Image (cartoon, rainbow, N blue to C red; front, side, top):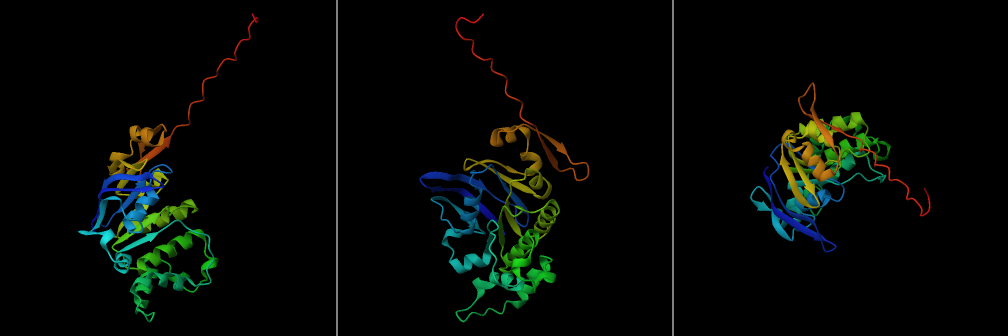
Length: 267
């Protein structure tokens, strides 16, 4: 599904936290949303999800502005997984995944969505977890179940806010490979630039709420941009197996020693 951000901007607390962003994530692919803390990544995801209304510009899914969609219809088309919480709900995994069917439920609480839940569990490789209590899952298992819950919504657009937080390396790689291969238009806010370079076909880089660059990681994640946006020096190498960019950050040079002041009368 086509997603278009056309000059999108909004203020929070009187400050423009997203300021005139133009971007078009490629349909059916994984786009990495990058930028330092405070760059506006989470706010932009909430704008795409329709949880915030833009003060200027528009977000389009297909040719329809998200801001004009009815809440239930929007929830059927767009799924947002916000950052992981530590809550322990007294539900099984299947019951958690079934929460994704809420936009389809009638006033009497039914939507005949068991097949959608089953498909989501299979797609997320979480069928073996279905009867487990949610509170017993590891961080990686929870993230996979969160994705299954979103897939149970049968969305056209999947939005992920820092999905690899608190996961070990194996779980990070597994989750992003899974999301990349879904074939769903997906935008994921990521802190780890090397993960973005390894798994994303497209990246959007924000700096102080504005678009700094967009394109394939090979074209965008260059030393000059990293210095400008992140304030770091780095070499960009080529992965020997995949040919993907690998970013090697430099340790900052030590500050030059400042001579102690000489008191009057000292030789």
